[in-house]
Length: 386
Image (cartoon, rainbow, N blue to C red; front, side, top):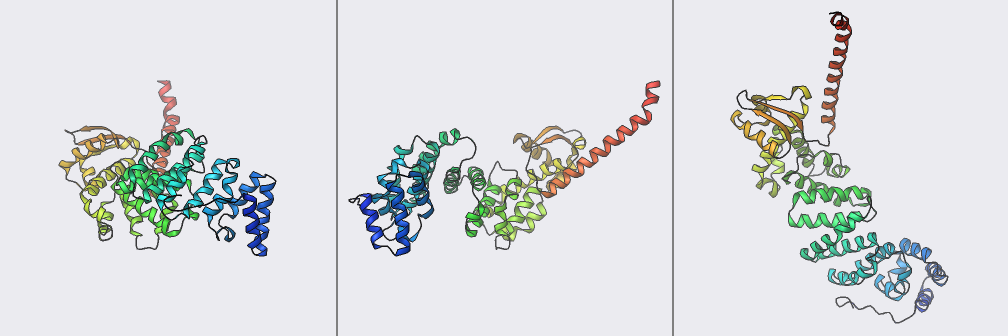
């Protein structure tokens, strides 16, 4: 019994298969016969593959997957690859009537699969996901903590990481932790084939990521998000303005952000955080200015910074100090000469415009090197003679 949902398993697996074959249509009876052959010959791998391939077939829906599990799969579950078993169990859990029933059902397998890291991670992540459905975020956080050593122990990105990152992103969205949501949502999208997600879900991820990136207090680079194909799902929709807004922030364009205000102000979270967004935009403008300046020309006057960031000259020093304290740039200030020496800017994922700027800087550097080489060839002999 799982939260009032009663599953009975009184007949043997052979009797169950015989009964299903007897009442099935001829075409379906052949599938039951194939299943029966694998079971009687103890071909556990072939049996598992058959179940994974046909689990959503109509032949299993008459009595429901919970009945199939109790009357058949439970008889040989110890023979099944544990990761495959968990995948089957998750399909069974979807047909239980409530999240509580599904949690109770899946929780009975925690001990069974705990020695297989991937199976354990998928099971715990799925239980935590259901706990979020049941609005029990505290229980979900306990499982997030339990999953952390499992994630660390798995080399590379496994086929089950998507479930963990999806669950974590959901948790941090509920908690309003923009920075953590942004990181885990991007990790989730990096683990999943976008074509497997409905377009509406892609749009939701894209929009929520945009909000999190803008409001995250340590996020000062949108290049990774802007290059993610999920954003394309917003093209041509009422939320397409998010693409332009992210681009405007990434390039530090105050004019573009102001022009888009009628659109982004419709989001309550963005509208209520306008002061924060404006301050963040000033820092991004400074970063962009430093980035675009050639490496040997990064002694920026307060006046040029003020013009680019849209602040008064007397506010520039505070702005640069804030950027220095956050590790966005490195360098020093000359308050007397009113110059900021900023030879380093935080590395970022670049968009096409920023790559074009880098290309221009490289071309200028190449020209400078060539000119220096030409000068050496021309005047070198004279200097050596002296």
